[in-house]
Each structure stands twice: as C-alpha cells, then as structure tokens.
Length: 272
Ligand code: PEP
Image (cartoon, rainbow, N blue to C red):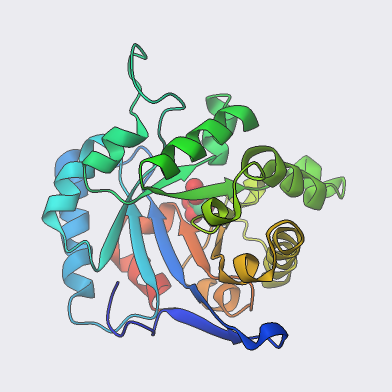
C-alpha cells in the first residue's frame, strides 16, 4: 500500500541466520460507532484524496462500521487504504440475529477485522474463548485480524499488566499454528488510555511491546516475532505519535477519536 513498496517496512537485521526481517508500520483508524453512511463516505473519500500521490511510510487502514464497509471499499483506492471491520461473529453462519460473519465481512472487500477491542470485551462480554473463535473464522475467510490486548488501570496499578497481557495472548491466540500466527497484527491498548486523553508514555509502550515480542519469540520463534506488527492504541494523536512510533517495538497505532477527521488523522500517518 502507498508509494514505494519498501518505504513502509522496518528493516531489522539480526545476527542469527542473518535474515533480513521486515515488518510493516501501520496506522489504523477505528471509527467505532460514529458517522452516518454519508458522513463515513465523505471522510473516507477525503482521506483517499489526501493520500493520493503522497509518499507515505506506513500502511493506512480504516475501520468503519459494518454497514459502511461495501460502500467505503467501492469509494476509495484500496491499494492505498485498507478497509477493516471492527468486529465479526464467533459463528460461521446461521440463526444468529443481528450478527455479521467473517465471510460477510470478506465479501465486502474488507481485508482486516479488529478483534478483542476492550469495548467489545467489557460491554459485550466477549471472553477469550469467544475471541479465539473469531480469530479462527477471520483467518479462515482470508481476513487479517487486528487483535487487541491491554490491561485496565487497576491491573496496572497492581503491577499485573504483563501477566494480564500475556494471558490474553495465550488464551485467544496460542492455539494458532505458526503460519496462522504470522498473519496477525497485534494492538496493545492499555484500557486506561482509550478515549481518556491519558496516553501511555513512550517508555511504557516500548516496555510492553518488547515484552509481547519476547513471549511470541518464546512460543513461535524469532522469525514470526520480528515480522509481527504491534500497534499502540490509546489517546494517540498528532502531538504524541512521533515519540510513540520512534520506539523500536512500536510499529504504528490503532487510533480512535483522532481518526474521525482527516485533519487529525493525517499528521499521525505523517508521523512515520
Ligand atoms: C481505540 O478505541 O482503539 C482507541 C485507541 O481510541 P482512542 O484513540 O480514542 O483512545
């Protein structure tokens, strides 16, 4: 996506086996339950225009509500902007009124799906087992899951944040094969930073991202871990994006509020 094919990838050379490892920098916008269809189309096309003929150093993804997906896919250049759903069902199809399957998401032309966002875990009681099913269905339908993990404030204050994040990953993802795991994007989103204006410091983000990469190295090996994009999410905006993205293990951001206008989203994309 976007400009030079290698401009959006971090080049990391590590000594063992002398492999060149490339992982993508990504800025993804989670629109949540905002924008009517008309407003959403206007935002997507404005972003598309803003990115046209620009060299950008990251992949750009937007996650509009389900009902906007097909229209947004048709309105933009999807080689420049990837389109993501914000959720999918934990069942393949059938009598599940109101649900939207991974297969339906894929049929719109969307290529990604956010799974395990803390708002889904908290307000809709999505358990690690439910999320595990969603990830499997997303992968089976050719979608790239953007899997969210992160601790609540009480867990951080109790010094349990590493343990909580490790367990979220283990419970929903460690059933995957190496090949399947290699298709994921992870997003570390400390719940206390989402929509609160309170951002994790660059040090806190780097520390957790390095920890995540370490546990993935232990389970799946260095190749998979070094190629995995781990995004930071939680009150990321134009003024803190550069400092957050400068960290070696922070490969971009999952952006909520600041993705709802091109004026606020573009500077985050340009932080790379
Ligand atoms: C999010 O919901 O994924 C998020 C990071 O929100 P915000 O940027 O508004 O904190």
